[in-house]
Length: 138
Image 1 (cartoon, one colour):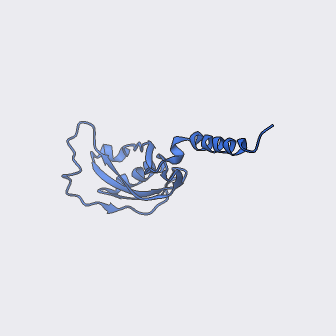
Image 2: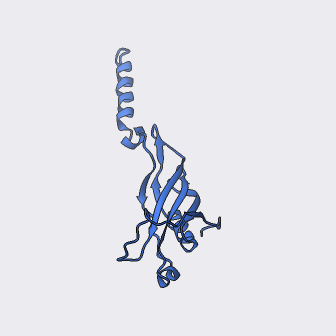
Image 3: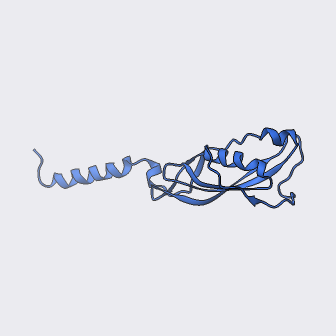
């Protein structure tokens, strides 16, 4: 038989157990993190023509860790589709605020398209980035 003075202690012990039993990630606050990074494929026509360039891909990540609202700006239009496609296939751990997944916007991911063995440096490329057409990626 439980006596009256024991009941509050049991509830306190149960409450402590609930707090301790929460997963560590549920208590954390952190930004979105890459789980599966983008893996762009070099466009075949660009490799035949020895074209190199870079892109800046801007997007947001939803509460499930999936990118959306993907827009790319590239030095050459030939890299636009592949830049957007590779980021669309990326998987993130979503941003967490007090353990709750939230949308993270305005992420910019740089992608370089350089031929193996080349000395291409996006920092010294004078070609400006131009916004790509807003075509859906499928």
